[in-house]
Length: 278
Image 1 (cartoon, rainbow, N blue to C red):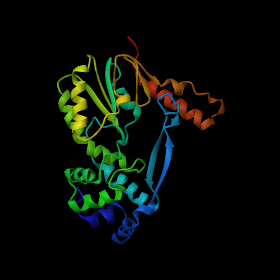
Image 2: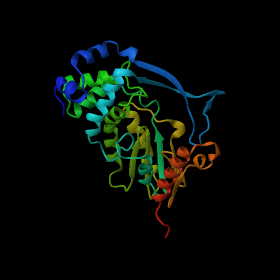
Image 3: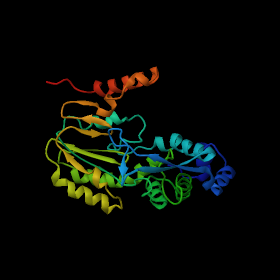
Image 4: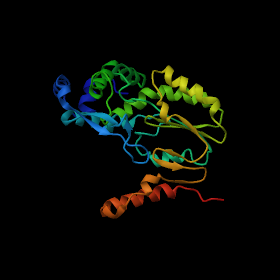
């Protein structure tokens, strides 16, 4: 792994120490924030106490964003992660993630509340060191990818760093389910477990592991299923997969040709990996 700051800056960030230092000194000025309306799985606006629910997106701009993109492309995308990690991994789609659970009747799903902001700069630093980065390079990377001592929802590097930090939790969860014929995948902050037998016997332990590592499951998004359920936006049954109902119900008369074609290709990709019924 990269040990030298100069090596990181010149050969991977394609920048100079002087430029990087100047950017970090003015880091706050490179960030923008805005509210984004939350939607449920059916495309409806989420409401709470009569008001729209929003999530606050904070992201880097300008030269800092370029450095983050270079980090992602030249460094992060070259680092292997556990096979159960699907979200934010180059070449793996939400369809492939859902496919892992097709044909398994029983599913347990949960979601991590405030996933990115709950990951501190120190956690990011320690996770980078565990992957083999020197203290100096881990420190520099942490400064480049965090804002106000935490990850933000909006930076191109946030998902990878979050995956790196949560990988330790993934290992504990994999150890828990080992030998029980249970499939586990994680799409960023969405965790899905599936099996041909009921999963209630591991649910309490799963929740405890998550809490023990400083994360909080989203209570309203934590549930067991034994029928069709949505996994990363795809309706998954025992023997079939299809786009969620809200996708299928969209009126395409007001869409342009490219949008219609894109929807068609997405639908074909989802349906195309459905095995023939016996």
